[in-house]
Image 1: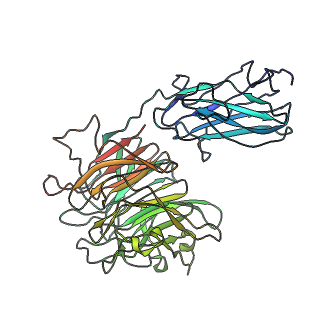
Image 2: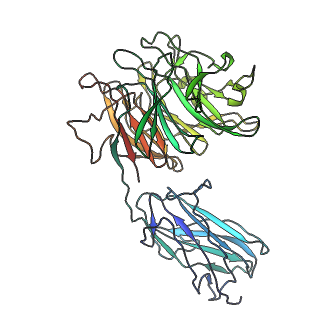
Image 3: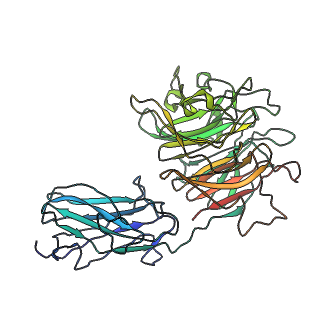
Length: 493
C-alpha cells in the first residue's frame, strides 16, 4: 500500500458535559496527522476525508452531551477493499486495539471502495466522570489492520446533581396537579404547563405556562369543571393534509370529594388560548382518576388509575388524534394491561418516555405499594403492544411520586410509602437497566431548612432540555403551609 496524506475527522462526546483533550469544547476535532491509520506493517492506508461531521446522539439528534460517547468519522478514496471497520475503546488502555480483554470495539462490517464512507459507533458502558481512549480501525482484504492515532477523552466537567429554586407557580399551593411540556407552534419554544389540583378546601381549574428562559409563569385559559388527579399530554402528529400539529390534551380526574370521576377529554387550542372539549365520541372510554399518560410518536396513551367504583385498573388505552378529528371516528382503543397481566393494576403510578419506549412504575393497590418498573413497547405494524420487566426502583415502594426524563435518562422520586412522605430521587439508565441515587429533592446551594420543606407527595414534574422541574404537592399535617406552590429545577449535568 502506498503512503498518502490523510485527513480524518473524529468527533467524540462522552457522558455528561464532557470535554476532550482537556478542552472546554463539547466535541473533539482531530486535524491532519501524517501517520494516521498506520498498519502493523508500518504502511499507511490510502484514505482521505473531505469534511467534518456534526456530533449526533444515538438517535441522530444534535447534542452537546450524552450518556454514551458517539464517535463519527468519514473517509474516501480507499486504496484497498475494507472487510471490517469501526472503533475500539478502553477506559484503561491508552492504546486500545482489537481482541484484548480491556478493550471494546464496534464491528461496522465491510464497504465498497466506490463510495464515500461515514462510520459512527456508539461507545457504551461509560459512566459519569469516566475518561476513555478511542481510535478507529480498518481491516483490509489482505487482513492488514490499520489504527488511527488514539484520542483521549477526559470528563473534566463534573456532574452538577443539584436542585435550584425557581419562581413559584402562580395561584395557590396544591397537590394532584397535571403537567406536560410542549413546543409552541407560535414561536417554536418549549414551555412547561401546570394546572388543576386541590388543597384542603377545594379543587382548581386554572392552568399556567412556564417560560424556562425567563423563569416566569403566565396564566392561560383554565377549565370550568375543577378537578384533581387528572392526566395530560402533548402530541405532535401530521394532520390529514400532511401539516404538523402540536396539541395538548387533558381529561379524566375527580372532584374534591373523590366521589365523582370524569371521562371528558379536552384539547388545548394554542391560537385561541382555550381548552376546548372534544366531541362526545372522543371522550375517554370510562370515568377514571389517578392514572398515568404519555405520548409516543403520534399517539397518546392513558392507563392504570381508579374507575368510578374506586377499583384500580391495569388497562391501557391508545389515543389517535387523527381519529378524534374525524366525525364518527373511534380515537380510543384498548391495547394492553401493564405487565401484560391484570394482576399489576394500580393507581398513582408515574411514567416517562425515552427513545420511543415508555417506562411506568411505582403506585399503589389497596394499600400495597409498588417499586417495580415496566417498559412499554407500542404497537408497530402487525405487532401488538407489550411490556418488558425492568430493574426495580431501588428505594421504598411508593405512590404519588414524580417522574420525568432528561438526556435519555429517567428520574423518579418523592411520594408516599404508606407511612412516610419522601424526598429521595433516583436516575434510571435504560440502556444498562441500572439505577443511581441522585441528590434529594431541593438539595443544593439554595436550600434552607428553615424555609423549605423537602418531603412532598402528589407533586408534579416535567422536563425541558437538560433540566427537570418539580413542584407543588402536599407536605403533611405537621408543616405550614401544608400545600406547596414552590418549583425547583434539577440539573444533573
